[in-house]
Every structure is written in structure tokens, then in C-alpha cells.
Amino acid sequence: MVSSSKHRRPRDPRREPGDDSAIGQSACSTDRHAPVDKHASVSLFPLANADFDRNALAAALNHNDEWMDRACVALRAVHREGTQPDFARVIVSHREQAALSFHLSADIRLCAQLTRAVHHALAARFARVVPPSLLIDVCPLVAPDNGHVLSPDIVAELASSVGPLASSAAEANWRQAAVSAYIVTFRLARQLMADTSPAAPNVLDDKLDAAVWQLRMQGTPEARSLAEALASMRRTCDVAAFDFDAPFPQHLALLQREAMQAFQRDLTALDVQLAMARPGPFGATHFQPAR
Image (tube, rainbow, N blue to C red; front, side, top):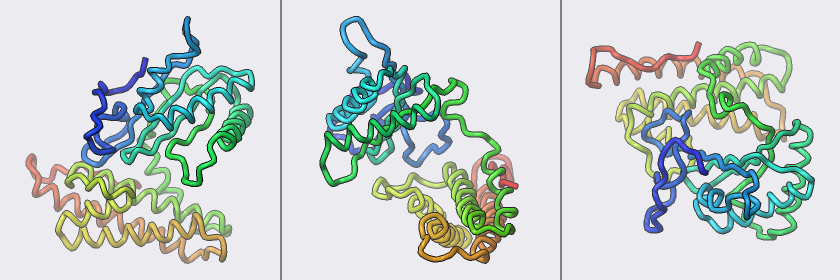
């Protein structure tokens, strides 16, 4: 059986990729407008007449033949190591990119070894140069109450960590501060835009592009200024995370911290401005900035 939070309709080949005909919507998503990832879990316990319910796995993989081929190769690699996954978790993005995780009762070290075996098997079987649209790994069992649950305090925790990291004496911490500051601003912007902006066009595959588009669609200088700031912070984040050809200076981390704090203040002001134009009690804002 495929478990999901939303009943799946048969896939209509005439529909565009990324519509809601994929697997059930993730229970942790709060974005009502923008395309969201879809989640499903599939039992892999052996059945009477087959290794497992292939139809259930195929349904979770949107009946994509290439994905199913990769999944079967990976599963055989796991079986060759003498292990049996309990279930598979599938996450399909709105642009038909997917991730498949086999979950079994094993420690982290064994899961890492099995993931490496899976990658070797996939590399031996598939020689195409184009990167695959289905990525596969092996993970330990996760308690049901811990799966796909976002801590309500995680954004606030990240925000509070930026200052100490940026003020420390280590470049690694400066890089972490710059990345965390962008994550905070991006998440808060998405949180507000989810309820105040039209859905972003499907052509905007990048989530930053979608958030920037939604901010600009508000039609005010204040919102456009936030869009500029968000894109600029993403650039600094990318440098901190990926550019190791040159040292990452502390002043960029400190500037990113200041930009995050200013973004929070300006986003709160924008929420108040938008609340005045929304139906309901005067001043009924829903956005709470991370502290």
C-alpha cells in the first residue's frame, strides 16, 4: 500500500509535469500556492508471490520506467549485502525530480556502506552522462513521530546562531553564519508569500526565483526592495557554501547578519501593510519574525 496524505488520481499524460496528480502532498508543507514536494511511503516486506509490491512502488514513482529501473537495481544491491529494507520513502518535486530512500533497521555506518554499494551498482548499470532525476540512498528507520516534522523553533534557532558564528574567529563559522542567515530570510519570505501572493509560474524551477517573483508581484517598492535583498543574500550564501578558491572574509558574514536583521524588520512591516489590505480584523497579521 502507498500511504499519503492525499488520494492519488490516475496520472493523466496530458497534464503538465508538477501538477497535483503526483503523490500526496507533504504534511509538513505550509505553502498553499507554490508547488510543493510530494511524499509517499511504500512497504517493502516480501509478499507471498513476489519480493514486494512492485505496483505500489511503481505508483509511488509516478509509473516512471527509468525511476523504476533504478529502484530495482538499487534494491538488488541492498539485497546482495544481506539486508532487507522495511519500507521506501519517495519524495517527488514539482519539477519531476525525485529522491528514493530505503529504510531498514541498521546503524548509520551500515547505511552509509549500503548507500555506497547502491551508487556503485547504479554506476555500473547506467552509463548516461545526463544526471539522473531519481537519487537513491539508504537510511535507518525513523520513528513515525519524527518523520517529515519541522521543528517550529528551527528558524529562530538558526537566526540566533548567526550572530555568534559571524563574531567568532574561525572562517568556517563565518561561512556557516552567511548560509544560516540566508536560510532564515528565505524561509520567512516563503512563509509570508504563501498566503499573500499568487502561485509562481511552473517555469520558475528555482525556489529563490519563485520567491523573488512573488515578492515583486506585490507591486510595491517595499516588496521589490525585499526581493533585491533576498537575491543579494543568496549570492553571499553561494559564495560561502561553494567558493573555496579564496578565503571568505569575516565582514561578509557580519554584513549578512545585518542584512538578515534588516530583512526581518522590513518583512514584518510589509506583513502589516498587506494585512491592512486583507479581509478580516484590522491589523490581523500572521507573520512572526524569528528572534
